[in-house]
Length: 114
Image 1 (cartoon, one colour):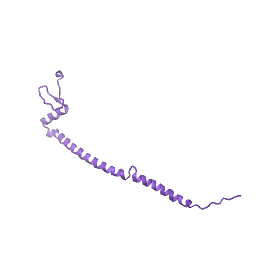
Image 2 (cartoon, helix red, strand yellow):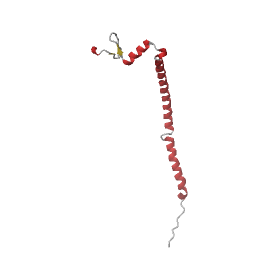
Image 3 (tube, one colour):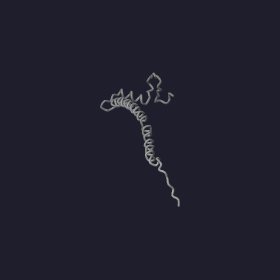
Image 4 (cartoon, helix red, strand yellow):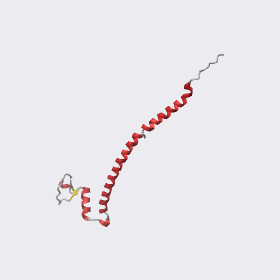
């Protein structure tokens, strides 16, 4: 019967630390440059600035719309403002009115004029 003698290899002692270093290096690289890494963080910070600017613009538009709506509330209703808003929204004129149009198409309620 033969017994085989093996020499002690230095790699036998190093394979676990090398595998661990490769494992940590792989995940460290992807943590730094992956989907949520440093470049993505800078991109997201730029998006935050852009979205805050957009939010401010939307808030300004909302304030303008709320002011226009406040004119139409029953306690502050003005007939002239109501007439102007209705004509603008519906894009209609009466047959006895003369309108000078600067690009907007006006429609008449009377279909016989067409």
